[in-house]
Image 1 (spheres, one colour):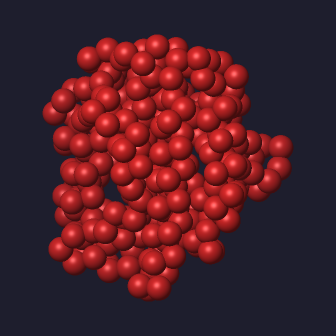
Image 2 (cartoon, rainbow, N blue to C red):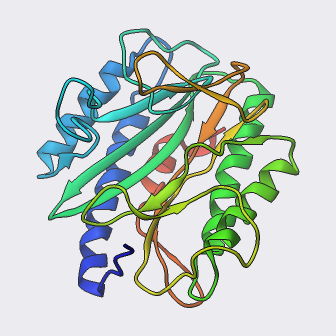
Image 3 (tube, rainbow, N blue to C red):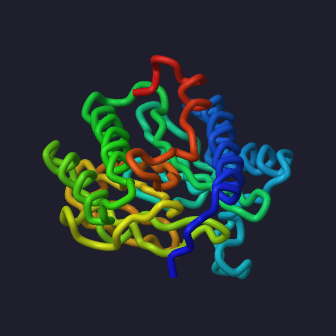
Length: 265
C-alpha cells in the first residue's frame, strides 16, 4: 500500500532528511586515504544520536544476528550498495558510497553520496558525475501525473548513453514512517508505464550505476552487493516529495558540497 503524506508529515520528513544531509557533511570532512569506514560510521552514529535521532540502518530489519550492524552502508570501489563498514584503510584512488538513514520524530530520512578518496582516475570521476546527474534526471520526472517508469527511463537512458550499466536487482523505494515502503522505484523502465505519481508520495530515488556491465553478486556476509566484473560502481540518492510541476528534494547535498568545494570529482 502506498501512503500519501500530509504537509505536516512532509515537514517532519524534511527534518529527518536534513539531518541525513548534515551527517553526510560530517562524514565528508573525514574522507581521505588512511581513514577506515568503521571510523566513518562511528562519527555518523554519534552525530545522529546527538541530534535526537536513531540511525535507521543499525539493526535493520529485525535487530538480530543477521541484521545490518552499522549506522552507515559504506561501499568501496566495486561494492554497489550495503557494504558493511570495516577496519581496512581507504586508499588514494578509491571511491566510497556512503548511504545514511535516520529516524526522527517518527519519520525516516535516506540519502547516499559517492565520494572520491584522494586522486581518482578521470574514468571513475566521470562515472560519479554521470550517476549524480542521472539522479536529477529522475527527480525531474517525480511529478504528479507522471509514472514510475518515467523516473526509471530518465535514469536508465541517461546512464546507458554514456555506456554504463544500470543495476536491476536493487531499486529505490517509498519512504515515510518505514524506511522501505511501497512503491519500488526502479532505475530502469518505460515512459508512461507503472504506478501513476500522486501528490504526497515520498520516494527515495537512488541510481546504482556500474562502470562495466550491470551484473552483481551478493557477498558472503549476506549484505554487500558488488559488481560481478569487479569494476567500480557509483550510488547517489535523494528522498523527494511528489508535487505538481516539480518535486521537492527533502534531503540535501549542500553540507557535503560545502566541505568538498571544487574537489567534488
